[in-house]
Image (cartoon, rainbow, N blue to C red; front, top):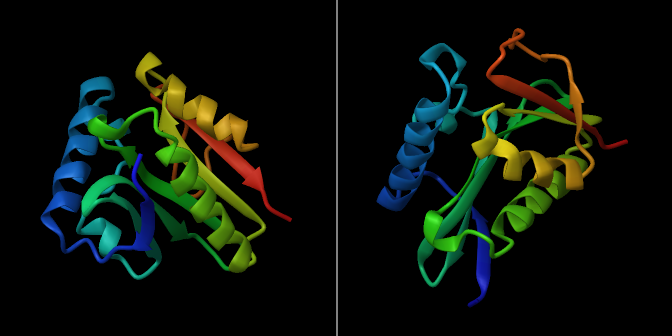
Length: 155
């Protein structure tokens, strides 16, 4: 695999839109509309969110974002790897990058929400391998049979 460059992205590139739309389309296959919490590119431009892209040879291969919930807590959003780049360790690289930034910002904990369908099992395994543990709904989330919630303590 060629060199991976992870950089903050302003979401202006059309390839970001394509990857994010694919992410949203996939979420709608496995969860009802009210249970899909993935953000579109407009929502990801919020000032509380930092978005990263992982690029290989000028091609967007994966992405992820960190949303500040408070001065102590953040949420991981929009973790997605292009189907052309699965099983290359890109999700590990993006997640590690996000967690390192969360530590730099001195967050005490990082949360995330993912689905319950079997298609989400690889993501759940990734998060568990990074030390995330299941938790109760956080922030504005409520119990939802289509959602699993995770938390990782950083301090």
